[in-house]
Length: 569
Image 1 (cartoon, rainbow, N blue to C red):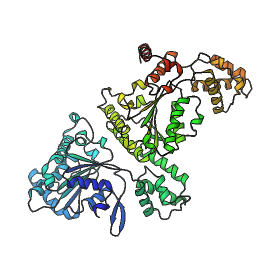
Image 2 (cartoon, rainbow, N blue to C red):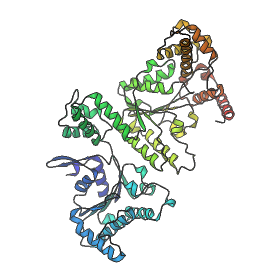
Image 3 (cartoon, rainbow, N blue to C red):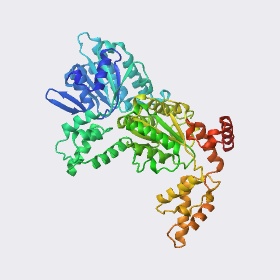
Image 4 (spheres, one colour):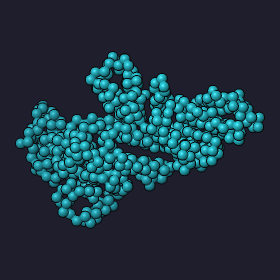
């Protein structure tokens, strides 16, 4: 297999080694997928370990693998030489590793180290050696060094020595640590200047088509071809594709509906249930009021229709008081765009390192899934408090991961972020700045009597208890700051009263009683505080109601700080 036939990531690894950039490589990402091994007889799809052994290190004298489950395995050509070195180690150290190789990382790496250094010291042995440590995050897991036990410390020291030892490069020794998530590895290894990181991405469209063409035999396609299926299965691995093909053979057919369901299921599962697909059932036409916000979103949608993704913002910050429809307008905008819509769920974990690893996997999936709209609700809590103590730096690392991804202009138009919050003041400035989440859209409760009436009518249609416009009096809501959720609650109360009276149809009398009796759950001060936070955060005056547009900003800031102190926010 020539270098030209290597996947891009493998060529990158080979080039870096030849250039002398590093002897220890961190291979991460899609490491549990099959890899195409192109031979004269044709292409086979093999595990990453098999690919490394056969294609990348096929000319090395010795290729050694280690993981805690299987222990040390040696290629047949090097077995005699390897055990001779182990026997010498036993004679000096009083061990019996030649009879039973150790599986614990500290001792196993010591055996491998002894073997490599024996070869280095022998002038007769000029062939290279490759060591592949699989599931490396279990060998050198993330954690505080001061809390490590002696065995883990020995393991870490060995890996650090391998990374920085010039003899390894001179003697053609390569070490590869394989892990799905870099964030799960000990930070001293990840951040070492002597290591080189190589990411294996999820397969692109061409690679998926190649696999489907090779493995799709016996499948009855309905309305699909290898080509169209390859285009529709972004963010899936080759293993995922095989799951789809096997299920299709069992069912006897493969159609678009089945592919869509399986894709959603497989991606959500691979992301640990922390990413959820949403299915927008409406467009911006369904959003009542909020004219300026809708106008801006529609302008951006028109650019997308022209193929000008490069002119889009990296993301939107949609803020405003509770119940102003932040989630609804975001899902409607994505629905109008016609791209997949996902919501990130709370991925924080009580296990050290798991949170960052989860996020790393999710971000890799989003990069492959794009174009995609990503909704993060309660973004202020989601991003974490960077000043939080006692979390071993987790919040800082989470923030760094988000900030890096949101600021990567390579994904402009491919990942469209929608950060939703009623407390934009709690979001880190670095997230809100230009170049990340660039457009800040404030939402407000209905401002005019007409807007309130229109919202009542819209919510009644949603309730399937449709009210006539003539039965709604704007005076009922005069002076009240009410959200769509408030109005929906009033309508439910009115419906309840009518049903108790044995009348199933909407009547003006019941609407009036419900409106006059209603008391908003959120205090006036709290609503005003959240409203001012949104106004201060706004990036375009056209989004603001007239009163706020004309107001002096310094006066708004003073009032915001007064309310902040009064509420203890």
